[in-house]
Length: 171
Image (cartoon, rainbow, N blue to C red; front, side, top):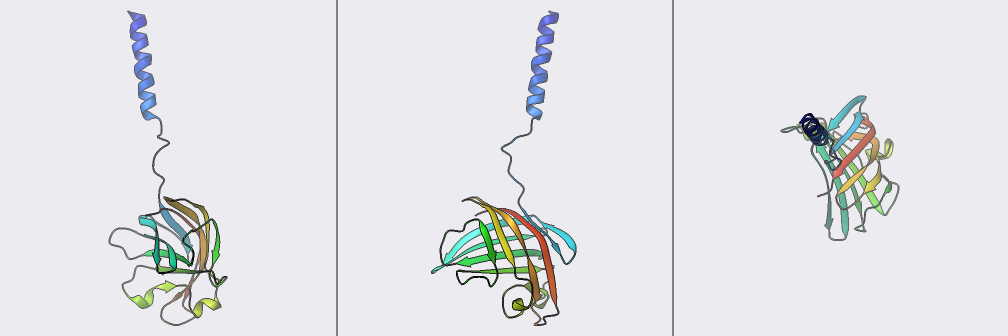
């Protein structure tokens, strides 16, 4: 009888530890994060990427916000003439084959408080660089950095975004 109880104890213990085992199939955490003007920020709400086409133009747009009911967040976009996005580095103003843009909203409802890349002021600063390190039909991951300029039209109103990372589902 003692042998039977010992075997049952071993059996139930193994079930307990098997149940506590980490699930390797768990979903990855999706996010965008960066050092924004010297402050580390992570955006994980509504974090996603979308592929879309408009006429002969194709877009890969990545976005995330700080939280529910928040307007603080980041949007990055790559626009090109072919519908296949691949791993590699896409740099603002570096090619006629694609365009790279970004928008950072610090949480304001005032459009003039929003920062963006591209345009005439973008030629003055550090261009936005998006590096895609992994891309599939369901997920995109990589890094980004660049200088974003205020919409108020002043080249002195800029913010440097560095050490950016993203890991996003593609919808």
